Image 1 (tube, rainbow, N blue to C red):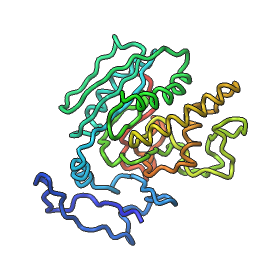
Image 2: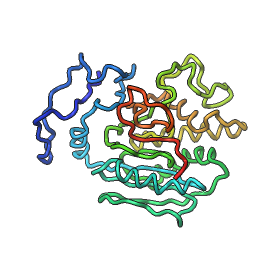
Image 3: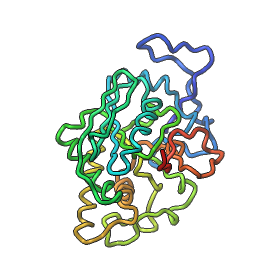
Image 4: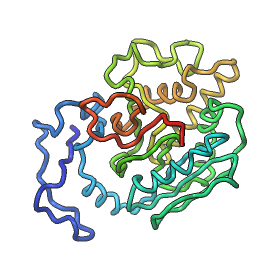
Length: 298
């Protein structure tokens, strides 16, 4: 059973390097949050505010000496959003850890990688231009798995994010795991009959109405590079089969993404606190909005 990590107890000293501090063990019969789901039916933890202790997690992560990649695609008019994305991620994303930004763009001459932190690198890869936002998302799956296979993406963990996201609170190693997905804020209180899965049996993304766990957003996902390779490769293959039949799934790569995760369960799930849609009223369960999505203006 998943055990939530409590926040820092009063009087504890976490400053001694290399030491993982003692802390009061959580009482699993009295969880720290009772208003939300903390574990899925397949025993994957669901990450909410107050369900983890980032100090302890940082100590554990540092002992592994791992690096983290953050991939983002900024093509066409979306290139103008990249500066805001990088500035906000530099301030709030994985502060204190080794990070490599993998920036894919068709306008590399207009891209300036912004970072004020040490142990951060920025790698810019030129990609072809595509005639629509939909095609960019579809090609992302192909590009990522090929670049992982070729070694261009060389980290232990990869976080994949959309360029129109804005980090506004700390996002740390609590989001890392073998395969991590984020629940969509529009659907976290609804039943599967409301989910906007692909319902046409002719599509590779098809999910029957009686199946489904959660509706996941494809604008923020993470995992080991091995798991991200398998996910993006599978989605790319399914997209190409649909394309050969003249089919575009209802929500494009996100539809294929949800189909993959139905049969390859995430090992960790991020609550909607990690992606909240701009303009959506904040509910009582949402204690900290860490990333905001949907503002295309700068």
